[in-house]
Amino acid sequence: MKAFRYAFVVICGLTTSCQSPQSQEAEGLNPYEYQLADGEYGVERLAYGESWPDFAIGWQRREELIEATQRSMNYLTKPSSKTFFPVGPGEVITHDLMSRSVARFNEVLHEAKSSEDFLSLLQKDFNVWVARGQSSTGDVFFTGYGTPILDGAKERGGEYQFPLYNAPEDLVKADDGVILGRKTASGQTVPYYTSAELRDNGHLKGLELVWLKNPYDAYMAHVQGSAVIRYANGDLFEVGYAGNNGHEYNSVGLALVAEGKFKIGDLSLQKLRNYFAANEGEAARVLPKNPRFVFFQGASGGPYGCLGQPVTAMHSVATDKDIFPRAAVVYVEARLPEMDEDNKLVQRPVRFFALDQDRGGAIRSAGRCDIYMGLGDDAMARAGHVQARGRMYYLFLKS
Image 1 (cartoon, rainbow, N blue to C red):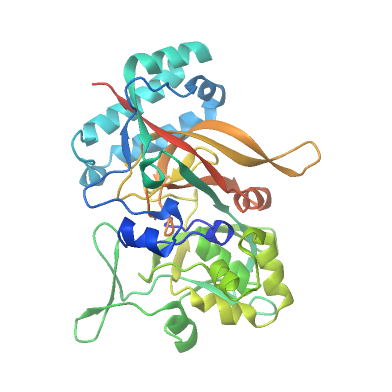
Image 2: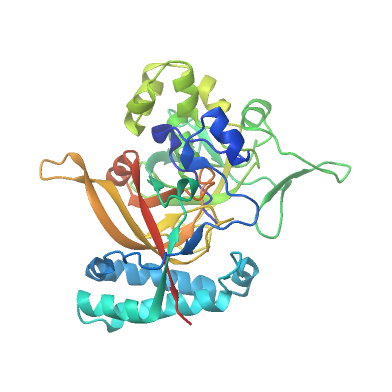
């Protein structure tokens, strides 16, 4: 089903909030987390006279982009996709406009004979919209996520003592997947148990899906919303998102920063892993500070985004789906980590097309976007170092 994941916010130190912009500014919260007023939308038309980005470069990486575009087209053919349209105040984006825009972009990818031809066709057929970004400046803060490969076992035993769980039967969801809570014996719907309550009180006994080596690996699966489990015999088992307990996500990394264990700029995936490995008992103490708990299921062919379609490395992004359109064509300008000739991560400017195909628990504003970096250790290392400020554009047909 849907991989409703969270940006790896222990790196950038961002938090979510539902307060007004005025109260956020007064409390000094990160400006990229400012919430739009009710009725405002995350994209707006590129201002008259403002130059187009250099879209021509997108033609050079079209093979995987075509695959990602087809997945958005697959989603838009489903009747259920119509329930999320139209979107936006004023000049609304209808389901028909979105479907035709993605389909035409796919045609242009096939028709163009060169990067110049590609740009010419886009200029002829499309209008450019821009993400409003933090405080409507157009600046967007990018983070990264990926799919970890974790050692695991089908049964508990030896070093495999930390489970991922199937979704419980009493978990109540709305038709759009929003978690409502749990059903009591009297038929009432009440908030679901927190992560600490689930770990301490045995509510999930018998729902174990796989067993992992350490609590940090389980935490990483929760953060990313999916994982590939590697059994001792070499077999691989994909697990994907099956729901959550409905509680807000709180960053474990920020909790450690608040305690003085780390400075905000010093955090990384590997440093956090090393910290828990070197400090026995810390994982059990710190991880429950995040009340959000994720449930899993077997999910071959993934990982899947919130559209129910597989996400594509460097061609799928996650945004706040309350204010950004699902399945849309996106163009990103940012600086991202890449391996150099010495196999070291260096930050380089990049520009690429992607599809807006996922969402994240910590991606809750017009100034945030999460980029899917791919599968495995290298992708996870890159994801953990994405702290990029840039811009994000959307393409919609002129008519």
